[in-house]
Picture 1 (cartoon, rainbow, N blue to C red):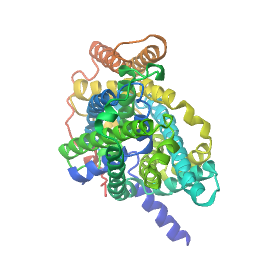
Picture 2 (picture 1 turned 30 degrees about the vertical axis):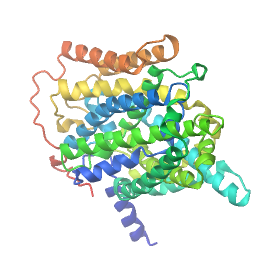
Picture 3 (picture 1 turned 90 degrees about the horizontal axis):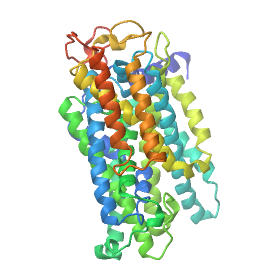
Picture 4 (picture 1 turned 180 degrees about the horizontal axis):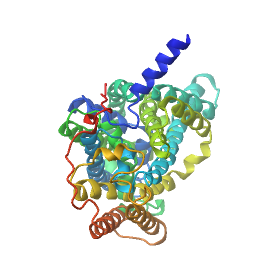
Length: 466
């Protein structure tokens, strides 16, 4: 490749990445729905469903899956609509409430969480591929396959939101077909009454409130990418409906499949090992292993893309970091980390970390944008310093303190004091009310008359989403 062609290739990737600035979306409701449908048709969501049974009954597990998903999808959709209205990704939007420099707190937290997700998913894909290869050849090296899966994801993510939009719908259809096959096998082998008759096991350590917290935290974990993926919509309606319906359907289907699959293993006389892909692959065979691999290719591509965007916006430099070198550096860390398979044993702790870090972030963002700022951010949010979002040295301490107290609330209720309603909802309420009271008392946004407009309309930053 000549220097000229190499430069054109790099420039094309930079232009297609979406990056820090606003983009104007053109996708309709159906396409956004398919993007979100594929997003959570993923092995981690499926295996999350295996955590619930037999701790609670299958019927109770499904009920809390639906309730937790619906409430979580409301938060996800509200953040996604902010992306459609402004054209900005999620972490760029935190600049409005946390400050131009204060936004580094949620951005770095986002990077850490998404890196954890990328490792977990690549490990699970590697274990699944390793099972297929071991069945055919006897050779086993799950860490190697995890690294290979992650390397493929890095290559896909380099093409930014264009590559994601192209592959997601097709993966979604294939994965849905395989899921339908698994449901048919399970429900034709055993009657629904047999599944319902499985007795809850209190020693499994699962409660209704914990099921809800885990399901809600799953939605929060996807909300970190909500504006990034939904801003490609051509209208608020297309983005809001597509994100809400797509996420809700994919999560309810996939978590329910996990709960049904582990119940199937129990009915067959097997041992219910939660969050173990081999346990259910052995029950349903190669189609499930293939579905796991495809789901990781689709979802981890978006995770890698989101991590890169977080870093391009996180550091207080004069200009955002360039997409390609940042993606390559992030990709190298992701590939190396995916080989440490022992991290899978800490998955539930990882979900609690997500809840503690990001439930208060999104409560604050929703208050700031919809109540304090009256659904409008000015072009000052695109600046690197100065303007109405500079606050005190670039940091809005009302948001930082509200976030910290919210995070401590979650940790206290999740690990130290038992709450009959779990940790998620009280944490959201604490951060929501605290920030609203503080912002009102200090007259944040008072007297502002900001015109509600898409920020891609600002001179010099016009960009289109393919």
